[in-house]
Image (cartoon, rainbow, N blue to C red; front, side):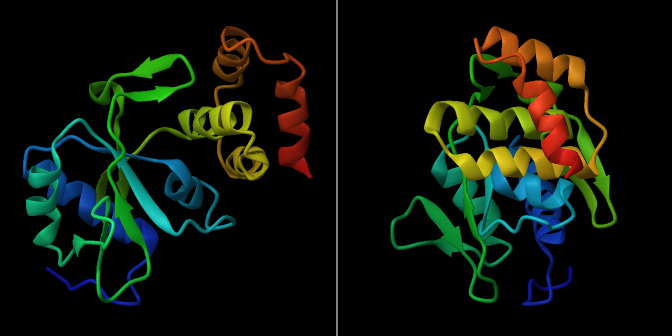
Length: 181
């Protein structure tokens, strides 16, 4: 297997980590900013990779240590001596606002580097909207628009989610307009 170097892309790194975890019997789904980076063709550049999982830290550490990752100083993240990206494993379940998504319901994305378990583009938009609504993170609105600009989305699902979350219905049109600018 090719070593991880400064030339390794985020998408390649994500696919390699995903495949390593799967081979170790660990189900973990890439979400957050790194999913945005992949779906927005690096219009947004994440500085970490978040794999949501219910597996324990010991199993995760053992699996990704085979790729050269070691626990960071804070022990919550993992770092690699050749790259600047950190890897983190937020605890499951995978959720976007009040909507839970089973790990088994997340399909594998076939990348040029092999399979990658990652939330769909539509779920990526919901993930960013949840951060926008519940953490007042305005940059997440822009990230949702970036994904919408580059990907085909299920706008009906987004509209239904916004309604279930009790957010303004006009945000769907506002997001679509932002994605076109």
